[in-house]
Length: 409
Ligand code: SF4
Image (cartoon, rainbow, N blue to C red; front, top):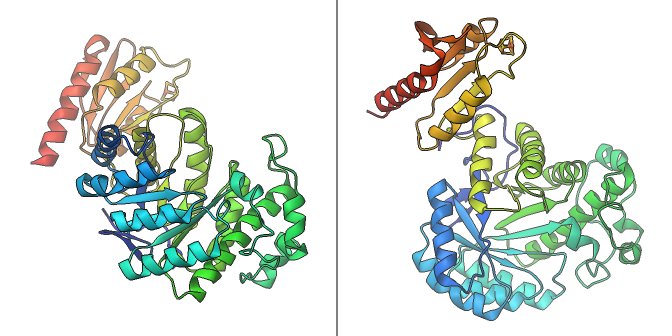
């Protein structure tokens, strides 16, 4: 992976998830999560392998029960990438996961109310040299038993005075009881109105920083944090607060991001905004669908930001307008479908006319600018020849394959 050159990164501590570093000056890594029942070894391993082949650096698996925990040792042995155990409610499952050899554990402070169990997990993780992610999300943190022994009603994390005055009073400063009484939040009530969004962001950060304090009291420092809401403003606010409150590496994502189209938009805004501010050390795009698409989407976002080399074709194409005289939309769709297996990082321009076409083609490795019933083929900025419309796709594909071959040799 190339080093991150374009945006100044927020300085953060590095932790190591097996051989994959997170934080410090290390490249932003990509994570995903399996959708199988973890105890189904065959299906889970097949999905882990598909994720790894797509470029996923770390894979998380759900561990909701003892049979799932029992499957971990075999999965760890066979997985091509480090595995992370996703634990809610039950700290004993985290201990089993650590014994099974997972490279990292994710605990959800929003649904674990077991200080002794937490202490045991931290102690064992420290002995084994494995990091832990404390990951809250808006859904679980709202319903959390915040009057619990872990959150005693005072915010302890260190914000600047300016930041405190921007955010207004801390909800937890008013007392844990107030948080407990907050009604459960449905999608409408969770709409990102300014004060609700700020309160929720702050609540997530309060809970996380209390857990960080507990962990540091136990001498445990190999932490990663995440604070995912289901809307963009709250998520951005929570991560910005976290970034100021500590130097721990941050795992970025937005929760319940929806199916492909919605997830793409929300994830691109959250990851794009935060990473361009230097915030974020590892990312997970979540979507309802194949997790392989999460990895491809994450790669696309990182590549567009210049934070990761591109794998495959990047198409620059115009939206078309009344000047276009060829079926450019059909041409672009066919081009995309027929270049899925091209891994060379090539930029291909497909422009509808000569107004912008030659200019855009200059920025591309190969491209066409269409005219009436034909197109001009460009390669590395130079016009090569005029091509009839019916041959445009084939000629473009031939150029792409030739260029891809020359780049790989
Ligand atoms: Fe219209 Fe030409 Fe611009 Fe495409 S490149 S949008 S056809 S002016």
